[in-house]
Length: 109
Image 1 (cartoon, rainbow, N blue to C red):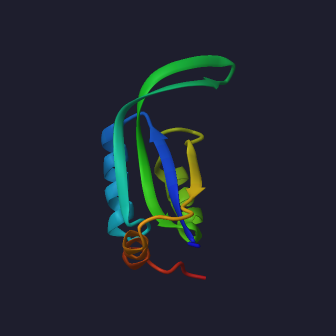
Image 2: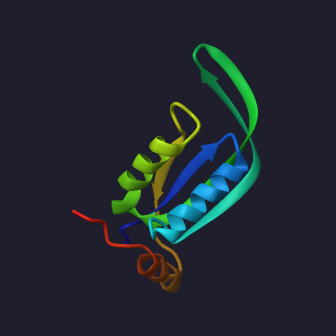
């Protein structure tokens, strides 16, 4: 039904993630970002298990803008390999879905 998705990004510094979210919204790469903090992340990195507090954001955007969001995150993110994933938005409030489309820019070819 839609060409929209939710992009999830985690980061060690919730304030950095809030500022990054604000940049993406200002540049119309996403319509909104819902920041959650703290989230507890347990992961394996370079052979060791880590258990730490992080921030998490859920961005609502067009699927076609995901590559640009990933590019920007990889460029600015404090992690060597930032956790970024997306999930399609299959359905929802039609008014809200139209709003996401209206508030995000058309990707440049």
